[in-house]
Amino acid sequence: MKYFVSPYNDSVDLKFPKDITIYDTTMRDGEQTPGVCLRPSEKLQIARKLDELGIHQIEAGFPIVSEEEQRAVKGIVDEDLDAQIICLSRTKKEDIDVALDCDVDGIITFMATSDLHLKHKFNMTREEVLNMCMGAVEYAKDHGVFVAFSAEDATRTDLNVLKDTYKRAEEYGVDRIHIADTVGALSPQGAEYLVKEIRKDIKTGIAMHCHNDFGLAVANTISGFLGGANAASTTINGIGERAGNTSLEELVMSLRIIYGLDLGFNIKHFYEISRLVEKLTGVSVPDNKAIVGRNVFRHESGIHVDAVIEEPLTYEPFLPELIGHHRKIVLGKHSGCRAVKAKLDACGIEVTNDELCKIVDQVKKSREKGKYINDELFNKIVRSVRSMADL
View (tube, rainbow, N blue to C red):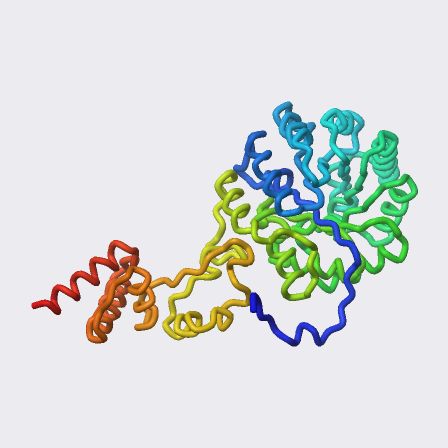
């Protein structure tokens, strides 16, 4: 077996859309993580890896921001990847023109729709805002590219206003509408309800763009799919503003293993691309980060280690090799004889049972003194115990 999850998952009859599109925004919304700035060459590295992964669309950036950003987006387009290359544009002709000059396959244009945002960001009536949005959609569609319209702060917008906005966008030929949970204020139940309500009036594609302020971005995205959405934005490692965005690796692996929905991604690249994005952005992956965290397949507790050595799936829901990760037995306060014996075997060291017990005891005492049991210290402990045995 490569994975083993709860059989109760199959007890619920769930209906997902036939075709789901995942577009990755690591290089746009992910780059809006405070302190992150990706150079064109770095963006290209990430884009190539995303393409190896099999991502459907890459949101390569926000071209109007700077000339370097334009070079980055154009460089990714020129790479001729299998993924569609899209970018972000405000609802302004000059933004769209710059994006078109980069030869992208499509754009996402956006505007806030909630009363809160309208009151504090714009000196315009709602009708004026709507006209600006539809003008942008129409202008972009006239140039023959894929066009998505995103309602910023959609999940705190009056439902009738939201429906009217999306219906107008559909009338103007938009290819997909985006539900932006801008501050992560949605619940999974609210996500499914909202999408179902919008789906009553909208036939075009619906995408979920979820933020993770309450740790619910992945759950909200999945609930959106169950409500009828058929696309979602993600970022590698879940990076992004504040608490970040929907994590690509968490979403894809949850769908594949928990829900049995395989989107066709080359998941063996997940750990590699996670480490690449960590390196290029300087945003550390927490050790306990789901799927790609360093601790996900590290074991110390003696009870756990004994079982994992016998059968990894006793304490792992899937094998690390599936995503290019690796298992590691960590020695420490909670280690038992079997863990230490496994380490000794890996080092090609034979000891007596008495020596083994003494090594285990020294490992525990060293860790309790605050020392990390690396290879150097472990070998020192072994030499010490064996030298005492020779006396």
